[in-house]
View 1 (tube, rainbow, N blue to C red):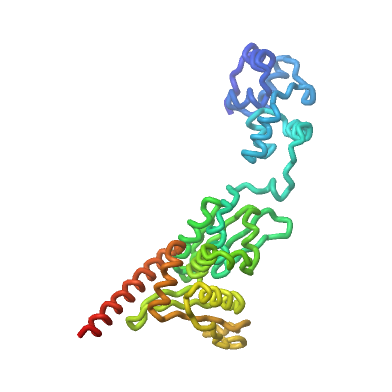
View 2 (cartoon, rainbow, N blue to C red):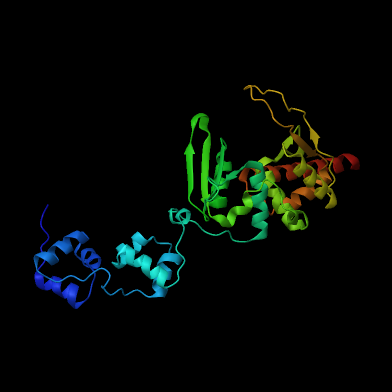
Length: 328
């Protein structure tokens, strides 16, 4: 390796004159800090003791680097040329709270949840239908969101929902199944619960935002036998009945959820169902139009939005045909 060419005068000017640290000089000259220490000794330049060397970093700057920018003490050492031990000492002197191990190990991008209630309601609805959410271990600072699907639009939706809040990983597995994971901070702790909070059902806008998320994950909108239909189902009997009751309270009449009594039965892959599956549907044109009007502003799944528009077109087409038939 070619030896670094640096004169004694230049080193004296940088180290004693400009009071740069060995880290800053190494960064300036494009070498490692150990090389600068070696040259100081070779040239007989008296070195400053680590504990005596003046540390020129204010509380505001250290707070910005450590708290706002979330840099590690190692990164601050490299950027500012201050020994890591000194960085720790200054953090304590300035009474800046030192991150615990779980927080310190977070290296990926994280951003706090927006706080928007409509968005929160939608995410809770979508979570209940299609997301696995957990903490890897009890003291973890990471909320992990995961899902998988063979439908690309479903993965695209999940990616779009969370990409501004955390790092997203996507991987294609066998049978064209796409798996997706997102690491979020603790502002998303509301997603850990598998139950819908009561505030969702007290507000019409919160409820339909929640329902849109649930439909984007679990609902079915389509035209079958030339008739627009809507159906929704889940293994959670309680949430299905709450949705059914709230829809009726909002003037959208629908029948009680029914069970298919699949608990204990096996599917084609010999999987034994642990619970019954509950579902209900809406077929009447007037009720469908009222429902679609309420949920359309909140739907985000491209396929569901497209299906809703087709269903609305079908309803108006049938109404028009019915009027023609009556007028004859």
